Figure (cartoon, helix red, strand yellow):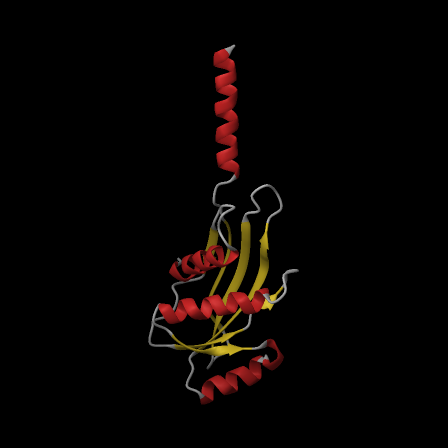
Length: 163
């Protein structure tokens, strides 16, 4: 009887730990460009119910790129967002790439721990050709004591490292 209870408790413990585990998934098209390139960061599109999730994600990405040595141009708000306008502005400022993206998930999951969950899609557009130079998509969640910001930042670091 004691042995059966012990086995059941161990099974439930393993299931509980597995259910709370971190699940990061990232897919990228190719390596991120070299450091000498200047990048204009757009506010990301917000496809969530969380207000200003796109601006928050773009702000984190801009800070991360700056910390890694990239020269970025301040975020461009969605009100000014026109790819044709952005390309002509970027050419005038000698900017090589425009970073755009979308936020599909930016929330705390419901439940006892309320784990943060983030899903992003990011594209780097070549200013000269208008074509996508690099793209990545990723989703991540974390433990209940983590914040959305740290979860998103860790995801972005993995996106830039890929493939």
